Length: 578
Image 1 (cartoon, rainbow, N blue to C red):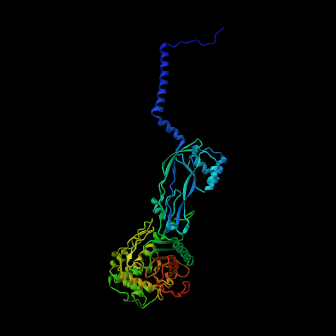
Image 2: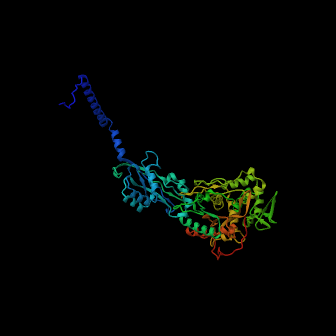
Image 3: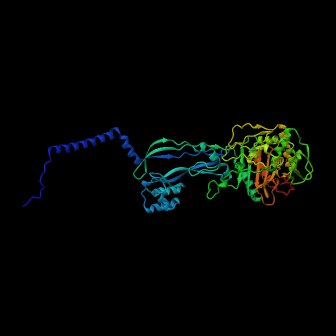
């Protein structure tokens, strides 16, 4: 019988000792490595462990509030929840994913793409599934109890006044960063500084322990605007009514504090709702009162008169012949909307004579007129700091031809913004000082710049009062119990190399009470098309209602006896202005 056992083979003594030595050496190496990691390099093991359970979470900062001058909230941040995931930790059934997609209003395939990495960078362990969910929906997401799906507290901007203040405030994006208006201009002040904290999560991704606050969040600063919410609403309501009644393409209004230069109200139409901008075109977001320009028409005539009075060549009672209603300069002809005869300088303003204004302008050196317009702030930004604010266009006087100097005297060949125009009239409401304008509430008013002598400013102001009196171009600007000063403007809109025949831009700029002005208001209607287009017929009534309301809101005393003044809705014979 043969045995099945293998024969014993004895190893040479040298090999046995070598094998034992190798085993002992390997054991010593493992022991040394363990001692090194545990004793001298334990940070490595701790890092590996923490990388699987420790996370640094960002803590959103609360964006500063924007208020009106009285502390009324205009822009506030409300807490919302955003759904995010750590894709490698997600463990969800198809039914759970279906319910999740339904709750957050996203297609289930979109959710799967985000979780499988096709829409995120390599190695990324954080991806948003839905931003800014209402609290009740966020609570239902939590109830799904899906490992790897979390909520993050964020803040969403809300604008209580909606479209009333939209162009002034602007808006923020989904990350709460300012994109337009005050939100963009004062982004650094409003935004604050996000914080962060370190937490420990379990294997399902749930936070089980707060380890430390690495950096506490710093809330943004509040910003108090100069606007008065009551006057802002009044301006919006009246402008909207006028745009609709006159079938205008657009409109704008600026209300300034005549004493401080603060912007009390600023409205553009058409407007938009910053709380719901879905489908809105970018052009609708522009604050046209600061970012768009137009030819101001006859509202520029007072500056021509002021320049001539300062030069000493004329007086308010100096007479200029305007008959027969036309005035030729080379091949060009200037016309008045209504034929007049000889007019004093004061009557040139009252009747809004283009011919009278042109003759006065041509009596001046071009530099004198340019310096007046430049000193009044035309051709330069107002300095508000608003994003996209324009400077307008005031060409160098050395390039002017006589016809250009003449037409510029009544607001053609120069472009301005509505805020520039309103500010320029502070020259006449503030005894010759140009007021700096501010979109922020001022605790201490800034000093103005002396441009005109008091005598000249007073003389022009008296002429502007005549505009709102019988025989002027804006009797509908009159306010019972108050002296009103202002000027109408009606300009043909530029088209190609010339001017459109039947497209107008109608304006009125004025202030009250004229004896001690409290507010300056500039109104503009773009392409009124309901039959009326003169500034005295479509813009002056808006001035009337807004100014009367603002004076009541501020309890400004009367400076004229109350009479049974005509209703602004009455049919009145109006003189034209261009």
